[in-house]
Image (cartoon, rainbow, N blue to C red):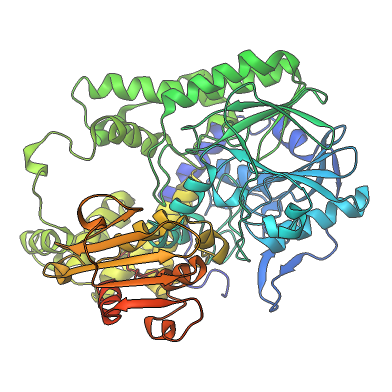
Length: 635
């Protein structure tokens, strides 16, 4: 896409606000810059990483513009963070431990063993992971991969695994380690609500935005998401408890099991022979998300803080360096303790103060506007909200404690967005009058109000040209002033789509590997959430699938609900089905995933059909199709 297409300069109010940030924080502190570049060994000679079809999935030079001084169209604090995250290459963490950074949203860590290398968190895409491993080998020799570890269940920590190993390696005994529950959470997150999360992730990471001073310049946690081939090789060894020790290729590891922190399944790793501590994504150089803007389960900051306290207690006295799956390491035992302690205090403070304030009757919006971090935490660069934010994290704590309802009965049964918007606009004198008044608010620098009020016009009249233009301008200015990388991306993506149309979902996480890792139980659950309820109210169907290599599964559709039970039992499971189909499990999976049609079952080897096969076609006809291109800025 052409860079800066339609983008406008920063308004005076944003210029002044960004200048105030420069005066407020210690930009002459260069410790992070020294740490981010410490141990640099070199980077790839070829800056572009491509897929097999020639498509670019990552460009190492895309953020070269960050070497310039921060312009008026970016928050200087975010510009600083993005510059640090854009450094790319192979870095030595300590003797025998290396990281490839800047090749994807996350880091790939490589630990040298007796015979080969142990790979931790192989990025999002096979292409970027392969390039990262090639860079390591160019500097350290062609050592085989003798083990892989996923620190947690988010796709940027496992999706590129096929760039470093394949099933043949696992068959030869190469272990794949992960925390207990990894597979369940990794596949369910990317399938059940995967379509909506993927569409919103297009806004959160801004992968489709032009890179530049008026466009995408990072996401705080890293720069953006690669767009290559996503894979998944299931774990062969589960980590189930704190204190569990494992040795792979002579590499001793002691694990801290931390479920329910940054991911539902996550763990930290101590390497006693290296005096090194891997904090996964539980302690990084920013305030993380308690609820991501793409959507996820709300994380528990109280539990998160307790695990950080435990990490300090267990490992700090024997760790000369702490590193994570994002950003750069921290060296020195005193600095490690300070870093982990401040990260702990950050999450604990947000939790405790939000709960205190909600018990005083304050709502989520009021708490977000009122809460302030203690000065000592605010002065630390690694507590800044480049990825998560104090504002949306406090709302997440409120949601976790009390849910969406703020207790005001006026908010209990509000009109949905379109109906409310039409009424608001009519009350305010019509769309043209709202836009006229909003233009004055824009001139006054009140961009938050412009975005809030013009949103009503767009939902009442999505084709109102002046409203679309003004909303794009307001969102753009909010992006220019944001310290949070994901907020900036959301704002600028909104402006971009209003001006140029939808970009869809650039990064697709529901890959064949992820779908193949679903259990049959999860597959049937994924069908149930696709049933078009109103269209299925009167349906009455019972089908039984008998896989030749697993237990039978009976499914029935009643009252718009698709229910299933595995094995034999009472009730519908023992009733005579409308059709019974005996088939290999591979064919059943293909049928449920839509790569095999009911008609293609006829005459297929090892398939037996008893009853009316048309009932299967009827069942599948009740399923809707998720929309990866749904509108966000308009109805």
